Amino acid sequence: MKKSRFALYMCIFGAAAVLSALLGCAAGAAQMSLPEVIDAIFTGSGTNGIIVRTLRLPRVLAALLVGGALPVCGCALQGLFKNPMADTGILGISAGASLGVTFCLLFCSKAAGLISTFAFIFGCLTVVLIYGLSRICRGSTLGLILSGVCVSAFLSAIQNFLLMSDNTKLEQVYGFMMGSLSGASWQQLSWSAPLIITGCTGIMLLARPLNLLQSGSEQAVSAGLNEPAVRVALLALSALVCSSAVALSGTISFVGLIIPHCMRYLTGGDFRRLLPLSFVCGSGFMVLADLLARTVIAPLELPIGVLTAILGAPLFFSLMVRRRDGAKD
Image (cartoon, rainbow, N blue to C red; front, side, top):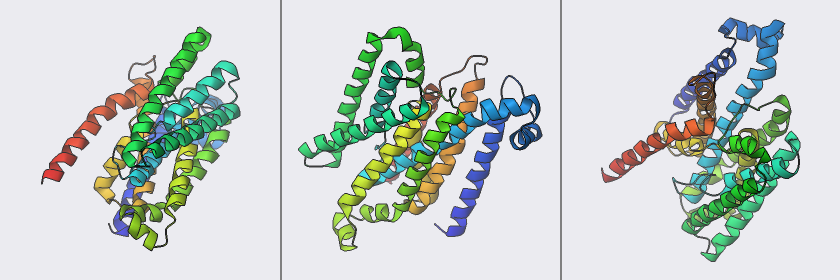
């Protein structure tokens, strides 16, 4: 893929993400025009400024970050394990982070910093547990994914048990489990945004080692790559990014699985281009999905995790069929 073509795609998806963000700030009970939104963002004057800066802008920024974070993690894990089905949800990282947030909401507090801390700790512990279990299967990729599926189911069962033991916060936690950006605030962003940006940057800096891993372990080692260190770094960074995203938005499925597959049809398998494109495209997609979730059954709000699953499941199935037909050809 030529650099000029990659730059064109980045400009197109970047412009789409910016336009989606402006539309996200404009839509709501108090409708605004795009010039009014831009004025409210930069001047903050009047009622429009209060509405946009206090309520809508944090939500839109959270959607941009989460929408970029999940595809980057999914793309990195798919490359790391050379498996198109690899994802933070399938590998159990999302389930671990979700359990950490649930534990914090039930037994501690709703402080943004504490929620992010619990999500990260539980996410990292889940990665360690899954990696340890996979060693029983001699560290195979299949063993890692099967371990992730088993651990994810186990952690989800623990989460449901905790909710049964204390149903006073059932509605709050259940809404979080389905995925929602309605509670996004500047305080939450101040904790999650630096972690997501740092983690995604770290993953993108490992794009070249990811490319080397695709050629096989022997060639990667002959090229001077420290494969175990790269694997640990990618798993740790994915846990950091995914946990921070879960703390911000709850559990949102399919985004980290679908977007990288779509981008491969445009950019190929070079992770130096695939990762940035996945981030930008995912950001715009998440803002549009959140906008649709807010407006499709207004004044009620559809959980964004439900919407992404409705949109993502048939799309992923069509991608699998296309991949199978391509393999036959």
